[in-house]
Amino acid sequence: MDDSTEKNISAIKIAATYIGTIVGAGFASGQEVLQFFSVFGIWGIWGILLATILFFFAGYIILNLGNKLQAKSYLNVVQYTNGKIFGTVIDIIITVVLFGAFAAMIAGAGAIFKEQFYMSPLIGTTIMAIVCLVTVLKGISGVINAISYVVPILIVSILFITLYNFITNPLTTEKLKLAAEFDAATPNWFISAVLYVSFNLVLAIAILAPLGAQTSEKKTLFWGALFGGLGLGIGIVTINFSILTNIVAASEVEIPMILIAKNISPTIQLIFAVILFIAIYTTAVSNLYGFIARLNFISQKNQKGLIVITTLSAFTFSQLGFSTMVEYLYPLVGYAAVLLLIGLLYSWFFKRD
Image 1 (tube, rainbow, N blue to C red):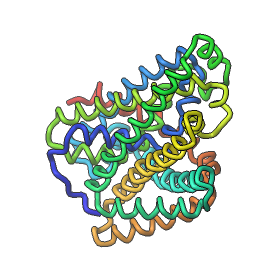
Image 2 (image 1 turned 120 degrees about the vertical axis):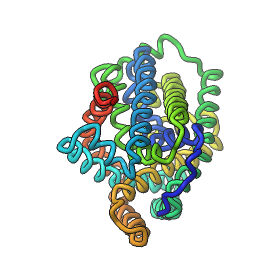
Image 3 (image 1 turned 120 degrees about the horizontal axis):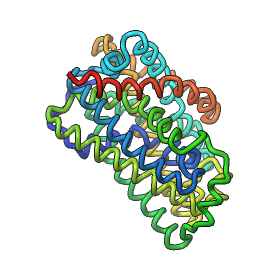
Image 4 (image 1 turned 135 degrees about the horizontal axis):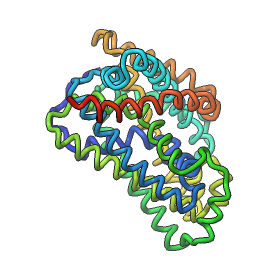
């Protein structure tokens, strides 16, 4: 895995990489947005605003610390923000989660091939494993380039679906009130926003920390984090509005956005299924890279072998199925998530020197 890349990486590429690490199966499918924001009706919009601010602020802290510490992996940042004891605990959890999330993304690709393309899930898992393997073998520059090409396509497709919904199925006050009657994943919109951001940062830190070390200009880090946070916020709010206009039907399916795309036309449904597959890819390569970067004590020669072994192992675990893996993996992430966010904010206010 070649970690060399140019030191003049643009803010747009940083933003695209940030967005790409988060827009995997849960985000792009609409299921996370439904559970964390849509069910709060009008209050969910305030939650999205808070999440957008936190995504920017926390993302900039990670990038900035990665730059200051010249981080080789997220371990440097985690131990600085949370100390050796809590940092070690979070490190172990994140490392396990990165591998598990990579396997879950491979499984998610199989689920799309089965449910949307009516093909064997083994085809989807095999394709995902191979493209991730090839991408990460090219190092962080390969990961950044791959994600920066994919993210604009995803954002444009989500904006198109949302705009179409606004025209054909306008959002009404009645639908906002109806949304608030559904069960939520958290007690209120404020907690929902904090947990949603902290949960996603566990995965994002894996690539943002070493990415910060690859950038020489601090203002580039700032604008990259700002554009990334705004991009995520825009993505969440557009998905949220699409779900709210179809709240009853969306609450009954696993992948609300594909259902909404189907309402436009079967062709749009097929196209979005492909785009969702690509969105899963962006998260999968980020997870694989972060996992390998954590094991930076392994020599460059053996590292390529480790990438192959990790991919084969994740491919094997992915055969357990997407829903099974999410059921056991996601609760584990929650234990580290809030501690990590608190550590980042603490370091910003009390360790600035």
